Image (cartoon, rainbow, N blue to C red; front, side):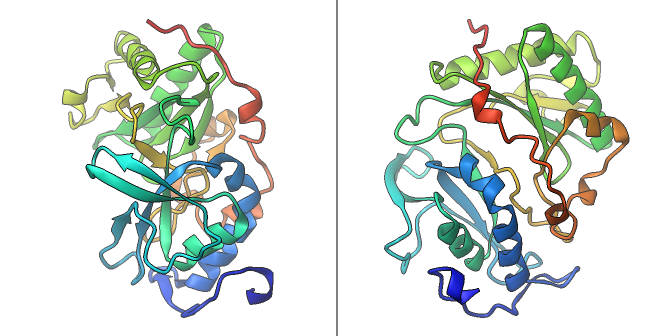
Length: 286
C-alpha cells in the first residue's frame, strides 16, 4: 500500500469496527475500491469529518479544521464558518491520496455540503432527507421516498436516491447553478407540504420532526453550511453500513440498510449516480 500512495501508514491493525473485526487497513482498502465513484462527487467540497481514532465503540468527534500535521499535498481552503463563528481551514478531497489519508485518520464518516467552492452560495443539489421517527421504520421511509419520486416526476424532474446508512433515505435532484439555498429549501419544503395531503404518515414541518410513527421530509439541510453523508461514506454503526447510491427499483425489493456495508458494497460494480452531473435540472421555485 505504501508504494502506491503518499500517505505514511501506522497502526494498520487497529480495529475500528470491533463487532465485525474491521481494521484500519481494511477501511483503507475499502476507500481505495470505491474512490472512483466518490471523488467526482467530493471534488471541491469543504468536508466535515466524523473521526473515530479508537473505533466506533468509543467516543468520536466532529472535525472541520484540518488537523496539525496535515501534509502539504492535501488541498485545503479557508472559509468562514457561521456555526463556529470563525475562519476554518477545511479539507478538500480532490484526489485518491487525500481520501486514503482521511481513512488513515479514522475519518469514518465524510459529510459534504450541497455546493462547491468557490460558489458556496449556489447549491448543485436539492436535497430531501427522508427520516422516519420510530416506531416508523425504513419501510415507511421507502413508501414516502417513492411518493417524492412520483411527485418529482409529475414536475418533470429526475431524482437520485441513496440510503443514509442509518434509518432513512436521501433523495437528490441535481440542479443548474442558478438557485440560492433559500430557493432550493423552499422547493423541497413545498413538496413535503404537498405530500402531507397525500399521506398521513408524512410530516413536513421542523416542529414535527420527533412526532412518533411519522416520516419527516426534512428540507432544512438545504442551507448554507449544512451537510449530508457523502455517497459511499461509511457510517459509524456496529456493522459499518454505507450511505449507498441505489437504483430506484431496489426500493421495491424490501431492502434493509444493514445489507449495504463495508463487506458487501465493494463487490458491486453498478454506479447509479455515474451521470448525475450530466443531468442538471431547473426547478419551479417561488
